[in-house]
Length: 169
Ligand code: OFO
Image (cartoon, rainbow, N blue to C red; front, side, top):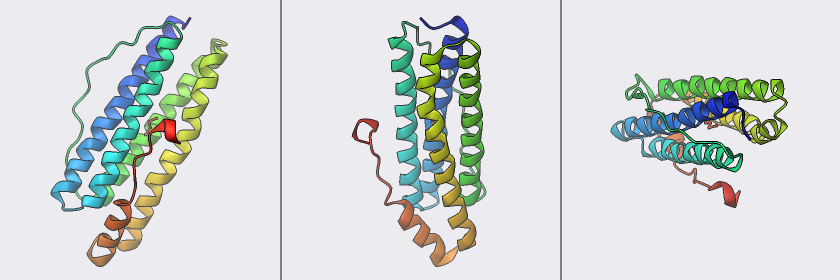
Protein backbone atom coordinates (compact mmCIF):
# COMPACT_ATOMS: atom_id res chain seq x y z
CA UNK A 1 0.00 0.00 0.00
CA UNK A 2 1.25 3.47 -0.86
CA UNK A 3 1.55 6.10 1.88
CA UNK A 4 -0.66 9.15 1.48
CA UNK A 5 2.40 11.30 0.77
CA UNK A 6 3.73 8.91 -1.84
CA UNK A 7 0.35 8.67 -3.56
CA UNK A 8 0.19 12.48 -3.66
CA UNK A 9 3.72 12.73 -5.08
CA UNK A 10 3.02 10.10 -7.75
CA UNK A 11 -0.25 11.78 -8.75
CA UNK A 12 1.55 15.08 -9.03
CA UNK A 13 4.16 13.40 -11.24
CA UNK A 14 1.39 11.95 -13.45
CA UNK A 15 0.13 15.50 -13.96
CA UNK A 16 3.66 16.65 -14.83
CA UNK A 17 4.14 13.86 -17.36
CA UNK A 18 0.82 14.61 -19.07
CA UNK A 19 1.68 18.31 -19.01
CA UNK A 20 5.02 17.43 -20.64
CA UNK A 21 3.05 15.81 -23.44
CA UNK A 22 0.87 18.91 -23.70
CA UNK A 23 3.92 21.21 -23.80
CA UNK A 24 5.67 19.14 -26.48
CA UNK A 25 2.47 19.05 -28.52
CA UNK A 26 2.44 22.86 -28.35
CA UNK A 27 6.07 22.87 -29.52
CA UNK A 28 5.18 20.48 -32.32
CA UNK A 29 2.42 22.85 -33.47
CA UNK A 30 4.86 25.79 -33.33
CA UNK A 31 7.28 23.90 -35.59
CA UNK A 32 4.43 23.12 -38.01
CA UNK A 33 3.77 26.85 -38.33
CA UNK A 34 7.49 27.46 -38.86
CA UNK A 35 7.50 24.88 -41.69
CA UNK A 36 9.91 22.64 -39.80
CA UNK A 37 8.07 19.36 -40.25
CA UNK A 38 10.98 17.24 -38.96
CA UNK A 39 11.15 19.15 -35.68
CA UNK A 40 7.34 19.01 -35.47
CA UNK A 41 7.45 15.24 -35.86
CA UNK A 42 10.29 14.91 -33.29
CA UNK A 43 8.22 16.83 -30.74
CA UNK A 44 5.08 14.84 -31.52
CA UNK A 45 7.05 11.66 -30.86
CA UNK A 46 8.28 13.17 -27.59
CA UNK A 47 4.70 14.06 -26.65
CA UNK A 48 3.64 10.43 -27.23
CA UNK A 49 6.56 9.18 -25.17
CA UNK A 50 5.50 11.39 -22.26
CA UNK A 51 2.06 9.79 -22.29
CA UNK A 52 3.71 6.40 -21.91
CA UNK A 53 5.58 7.80 -18.88
CA UNK A 54 2.27 8.96 -17.36
CA UNK A 55 0.82 5.54 -18.10
CA UNK A 56 3.71 3.78 -16.32
CA UNK A 57 3.07 5.90 -13.22
CA UNK A 58 -0.69 5.26 -13.38
CA UNK A 59 -0.21 1.49 -13.66
CA UNK A 60 2.18 1.56 -10.72
CA UNK A 61 -0.22 3.51 -8.50
CA UNK A 62 -2.97 1.01 -9.35
CA UNK A 63 -0.72 -1.98 -8.74
CA UNK A 64 0.12 -0.67 -5.28
CA UNK A 65 -3.54 -0.29 -4.40
CA UNK A 66 -3.49 3.51 -4.69
CA UNK A 67 -5.90 5.88 -6.38
CA UNK A 68 -4.98 7.85 -9.50
CA UNK A 69 -6.37 11.36 -9.31
CA UNK A 70 -6.11 13.45 -12.45
CA UNK A 71 -5.78 17.18 -11.88
CA UNK A 72 -6.28 20.10 -14.28
CA UNK A 73 -3.47 20.84 -16.73
CA UNK A 74 -2.03 24.33 -17.00
CA UNK A 75 -1.95 26.03 -20.38
CA UNK A 76 1.44 25.50 -22.03
CA UNK A 77 3.49 28.22 -23.70
CA UNK A 78 2.74 27.96 -27.42
CA UNK A 79 5.13 30.35 -29.14
CA UNK A 80 8.91 30.76 -29.15
CA UNK A 81 11.31 33.25 -30.77
CA UNK A 82 13.36 30.59 -32.55
CA UNK A 83 13.55 26.78 -32.86
CA UNK A 84 16.59 26.94 -30.55
CA UNK A 85 14.47 28.74 -27.92
CA UNK A 86 11.83 26.02 -28.08
CA UNK A 87 14.39 23.24 -27.57
CA UNK A 88 16.09 25.26 -24.81
CA UNK A 89 12.66 25.45 -23.14
CA UNK A 90 12.36 21.69 -23.49
CA UNK A 91 15.72 21.23 -21.73
CA UNK A 92 14.69 23.52 -18.85
CA UNK A 93 11.50 21.48 -18.57
CA UNK A 94 13.33 18.13 -18.59
CA UNK A 95 15.65 19.35 -15.83
CA UNK A 96 12.57 20.29 -13.82
CA UNK A 97 11.19 16.77 -14.40
CA UNK A 98 14.50 15.20 -13.34
CA UNK A 99 14.47 17.23 -10.11
CA UNK A 100 10.88 16.22 -9.47
CA UNK A 101 11.69 12.51 -9.90
CA UNK A 102 14.73 12.87 -7.64
CA UNK A 103 12.46 14.37 -4.97
CA UNK A 104 10.14 11.36 -5.14
CA UNK A 105 13.14 9.02 -4.85
CA UNK A 106 14.17 10.93 -1.70
CA UNK A 107 10.66 10.56 -0.31
CA UNK A 108 10.67 6.82 -1.08
CA UNK A 109 13.96 6.43 0.79
CA UNK A 110 12.74 8.49 3.75
CA UNK A 111 9.66 6.30 3.98
CA UNK A 112 11.63 3.09 3.37
CA UNK A 113 9.32 2.47 0.41
CA UNK A 114 11.82 0.39 -1.55
CA UNK A 115 9.23 -0.75 -4.07
CA UNK A 116 8.68 2.84 -5.16
CA UNK A 117 12.42 3.50 -5.05
CA UNK A 118 13.00 0.55 -7.35
CA UNK A 119 10.17 1.57 -9.68
CA UNK A 120 11.51 5.13 -9.91
CA UNK A 121 15.00 4.02 -10.96
CA UNK A 122 13.67 3.43 -14.51
CA UNK A 123 12.77 7.13 -14.62
CA UNK A 124 16.10 8.22 -13.13
CA UNK A 125 17.87 6.44 -16.01
CA UNK A 126 15.35 7.69 -18.54
CA UNK A 127 15.97 11.30 -17.51
CA UNK A 128 19.67 10.97 -18.34
CA UNK A 129 18.59 10.03 -21.87
CA UNK A 130 15.89 12.70 -22.09
CA UNK A 131 18.23 15.51 -21.09
CA UNK A 132 20.98 14.19 -23.38
CA UNK A 133 18.76 13.93 -26.47
CA UNK A 134 17.39 17.47 -26.09
CA UNK A 135 20.92 18.80 -25.42
CA UNK A 136 22.12 17.10 -28.60
CA UNK A 137 19.44 18.88 -30.67
CA UNK A 138 20.37 22.22 -29.04
CA UNK A 139 24.01 21.58 -29.95
CA UNK A 140 23.02 20.93 -33.59
CA UNK A 141 20.96 24.14 -33.77
CA UNK A 142 23.83 26.16 -32.28
CA UNK A 143 26.30 24.71 -34.78
CA UNK A 144 23.97 25.50 -37.69
CA UNK A 145 23.60 29.09 -36.51
CA UNK A 146 19.80 29.01 -36.77
CA UNK A 147 19.26 29.46 -40.51
CA UNK A 148 19.80 28.31 -44.08
CA UNK A 149 20.76 24.87 -45.34
CA UNK A 150 22.04 23.78 -41.92
CA UNK A 151 18.60 24.27 -40.45
CA UNK A 152 17.01 22.20 -43.20
CA UNK A 153 19.52 19.41 -42.64
CA UNK A 154 18.79 19.35 -38.91
CA UNK A 155 15.07 19.33 -39.65
CA UNK A 156 15.47 16.32 -41.93
CA UNK A 157 17.52 14.54 -39.26
CA UNK A 158 14.92 15.29 -36.56
CA UNK A 159 12.19 13.94 -38.83
CA UNK A 160 13.82 10.51 -38.84
CA UNK A 161 12.98 9.88 -35.17
CA UNK A 162 10.35 7.19 -34.74
CA UNK A 163 8.13 6.44 -31.78
CA UNK A 164 9.03 3.18 -30.07
CA UNK A 165 6.36 2.06 -27.61
CA UNK A 166 7.97 0.94 -24.29
CA UNK A 167 6.85 -2.71 -24.67
CA UNK A 168 8.85 -2.98 -27.90
CA UNK A 169 12.03 -1.43 -26.43
FE1 OFO B 1 10.46 13.88 -20.65
O1 OFO B 1 10.25 12.96 -19.10
FE2 OFO B 1 8.85 12.00 -18.80
O2 OFO B 1 9.64 11.28 -17.32
